[in-house]
Image 1: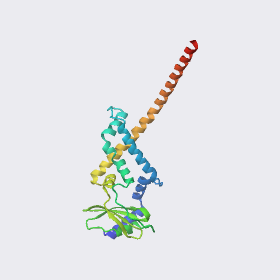
Image 2: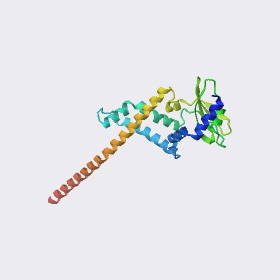
Image 3: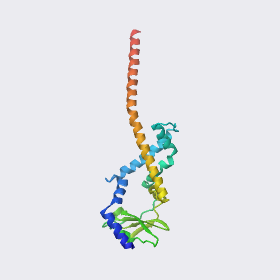
Image 4: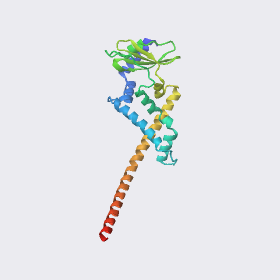
Length: 232
């Protein structure tokens, strides 16, 4: 298929069945424009991972808490992979510097793809909406991955590499193997979140009962002291 034919086909697919756009927005702003909330959650997740290390070395036990602490400690580099790279991306670390983009009429994805040069061994990876009515097109070839930003007027404003942070976060730096690594990292992170929340919820009733017992003991001691004082 020619470059133009591929552009039209891909652009029409995204315009009519925007699955990739849906997933991008779900990942970046939860489909409700909550980008700031996603950034705050990223900071909070990194803080929780660091706090888990500060609490001390784990006691290896065949319990839910033991598995939670063991995975958190011994798989820390893997578990921290996605939150840390996500945090670096929010801080724009390791990303190409964008030029000033001129807003205008939103460019069609098919038009944006056609504006991007594609080598003989090149292939289209992704195209999506971007800032200021522009589009981002990602291609790959023997020279590696390239990111192109096409303005609303059809001009290519930027062509560069995605950056190592983006490659690690998306799991594309080593092909399928890096994608599997990211999947395992995400599953481990979900497991830690669920087990940590469950352990915390399970401890709350116990803490309330201990608090009531402690209050009752203090009241009893206080009553005994008052009785002794009266007798004296």
